[in-house]
Image 1 (cartoon, chains in turn green, purple):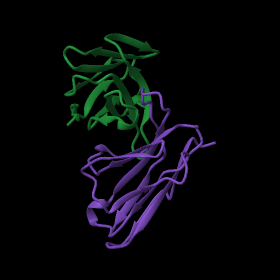
Image 2 (spheres, helix red, strand yellow):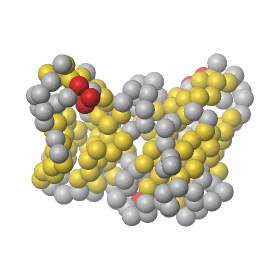
Image 3 (cartoon, helix red, strand yellow):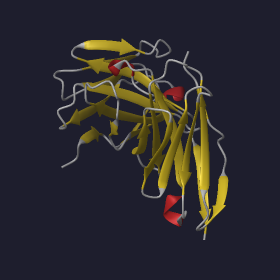
Image 4 (tube, chains in turn cyan, purple):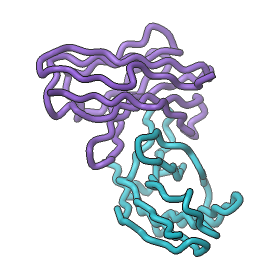
Length: 112
Length: 113
């Protein structure tokens, strides 16, 4: 049984600061890792994917992966009020039809 | 041009009824999914469908049945609705690349009274 764990929050961060979101996963064979953002009442949207150990940067977002520790994180620099949302960590084992296993999400609040 | 479209967006019905939710994707993807998001916002996979191969999450009651007339459509039929079926149901699709970058539909909020 694959499990993905996240702190549900809420995580409150002042505007302009760095928001740090963390995720751990149980399946050591997992190959692909994703961060989705979900605004209230909306569908999840992909913001980052990462497949190998290390950091991956895209604009204000940086995803970090450590397979040995089974740990994935997302950093959001220069946080904006529009970043306030629930962030879902998702993990895939590699088989295309298996879909993604999601964590329960971290509710992030950026305080103006 | 909506990539993954679901209908209806809202559905209110009585216990014991049978209902369907339709999903269509115009992305040319080979794999489609149904996810359920409960009141605590936990998003859980129900089914995946790829080249006529159906993979079912073993925790899904057999009252739920997916129907796929072609690879662009994956409908969800629910028999004998129960209060606990109230949730938001998301359809999603992915290219058959194994990387599983999902594109979600807007969701269908089902309320069972």
